[in-house]
Length: 220
Image 1 (cartoon, rainbow, N blue to C red):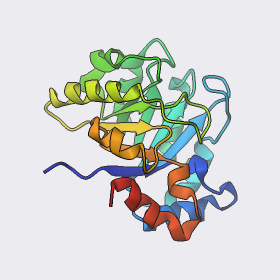
Image 2 (cartoon, rainbow, N blue to C red; image 1 turned 45 degrees about the horizontal axis):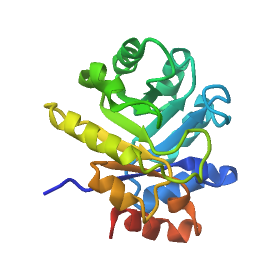
Image 3 (cartoon, one colour; image 1 turned 180 degrees about the vertical axis):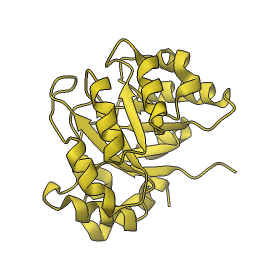
Image 4 (cartoon, one colour; image 1 turned 120 degrees about the horizontal axis):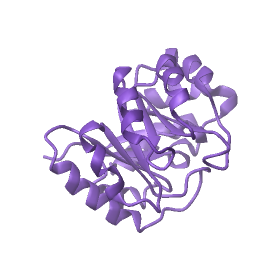
């Protein structure tokens, strides 16, 4: 039987004035991971949070903190996010020339290592480091802002990566982020995604809707 799909709500869509409460609410609603988008206003056109916020949120949930670093250069910040409480640290294949070394650094800190691929980056970009990754994140929008529409061409990339993962002898999460909602989630799952990142689709309607929103993304 296929493993159930995991849901990783992106706190980018949460109420930032009540972030601790929001994290507790999505935890209680059944989130599997807490997805934290870190943007630097340089690698992507937006500026979000730093390690201080991750550290402040850490006591509010025991769920894995899935920290997506959309920053370049990324290496100088890995220690700080690991110390702040990140369980998974995902970096972009496009963010620097030394992806292998960056993944070594993450793993050396005892954290799970992820690689993210922008829409214009082929699946093959992750192949040389497949033995070092715990998670591959396919961006189904161009990163930088929430609320964008799903880019359908990324479904073929998910299918390609699913075949690559099946050739490995250890588990690797295949995550998709961008435009995920009740309509696109089944398409992503059918293409091989095992973890869905969703912002708007989880947080719309307020805390009393979070559990139903998460169930809907799972297809329940």
